Length: 263
Image (cartoon, rainbow, N blue to C red; front, side, top):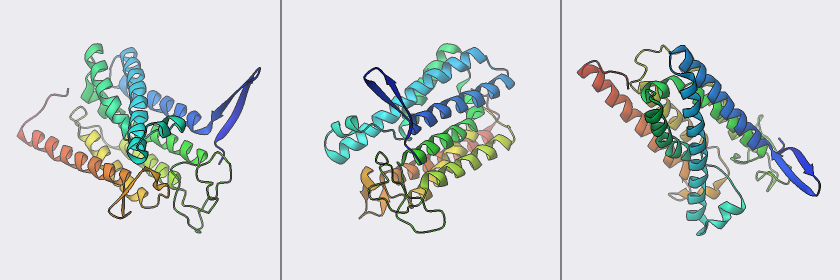
């Protein structure tokens, strides 16, 4: 568990290459490759798909950072804390990425619903890589725990090293769950692609995973509610779970009402 992969030195200038940043780059590559392959097999324009992925990834990163700034602003009363200590909040990714994807699909004449459903296995696979970056970087760490899988951070740049106690490896819990979701959706039959059922099923599944994993989290700086019983991310997880379930009910009713054309 080392937050630093290497340090680049050019003259008097030093630049830290962090584990989290490297794994985030790996995540983007994984999502891009899986989605592009699925799009190609479905007969979609590969070049347009790559362009849409690029725009969506950039907007998703921006959304993740802006939500992090907003959370830190609420927590500290100033955005300067988030600027001094940069970070990302995953739930901000869809807030930035979905509008960008919609815009890209409109301009590139891609069927957004179909592309999103095809990309569902790619999202948890890439997200799992990002959580490995959290594990290496020592962020999103777990509560103190002296169990068989406990990890202890000692690197001075790892937030979990203060204090250096044995902790739940919560990023690994979430990463493992995400890889299971990726495998399940990759093996699931592709019936009804383009109607949104796969996306809604994933949202409900991930919301449930996040609510459970949050119970083992120890980095409470992003906010607790109801006397410390519920975290900000758990609230967001419940909302995502509810949205996914509502979407499944809605798409099911549309199917019962009559055949729908993929969008």
